[in-house]
Length: 114
Image (cartoon, rainbow, N blue to C red; front, side, top):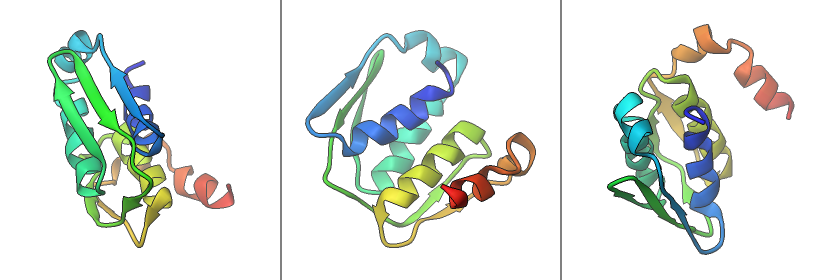
């Protein structure tokens, strides 16, 4: 479930109500900083997330706001931010997204087809 956490946080950021994800203590250790990075980047888009000792609490918003975010050269984060950018108002630009050229070169093409 390591690579699913970023997209789950995106979905929760626009879901109605509050989403609480717990039991991520091992994830936070193994994937050092991935959750923190998602919290930082989604917060730039206007999402409301609060990191806890073993997870995150996410208050759903009606919409996100486009801005500049960073993919941290992490495929799961970058792809999740692409989806967040699609649902955000205005344009979203993702820096440090080159990892997609290696991890999933067709991602943007597939996303555009959808």
